Length: 111
Length: 113
Image 1 (cartoon, each protein chain N blue to C red):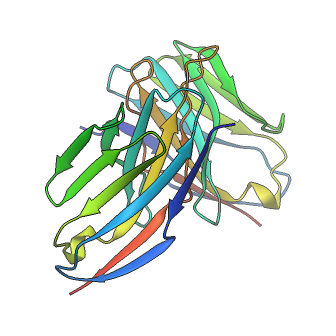
Image 2 (image 1 turned 90 degrees about the horizontal axis):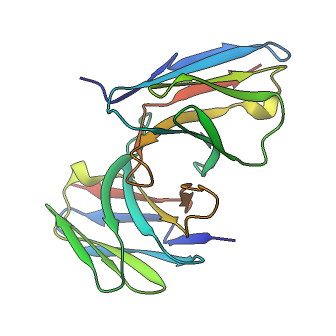
């Protein structure tokens, strides 16, 4: 029944590690996004994919790499984690440029 | 660059005390203005989309309005369950496939019983 789901919900890791966050949507949408919400609750776009093609790539370090195996999934892989990567990461999906629906978020804590 | 400013940053109301939240924006051609509600530890929940100046939408105790420079979220006779952070976002002209939303910093509403 869940529209946009993310795993894991919490992720605690050491600096320098590599981690992945997974996102799946069952809404049949063709566009998916990754947003980052910092400690001040400011939500900012990182990437968007349309039918497995990268559309938006904001000024994000190369350590972040999105991958879309199919249009229902968009994963985020982060290499060499840094303290400043600690945040809540949200996945979202939409049909073309229509309303975006958000997942529950993944709280990443880098120690 | 598209920008969104929300005010006030936080608002505390008594149950039943109506008020309005402001979202002012600058965007190169507005495709849509979106209101979301976010509860602690959860993802933003969609409330409204407004597309053109003069448009209004309502849902229960909430009413959103839009002008060429700002949007208001009016809350009538709020209840404690309306307590949340309200986010405003704009989507500008479709340039090179950019469907991104630009968010404001949000407005934390607390409604006391």
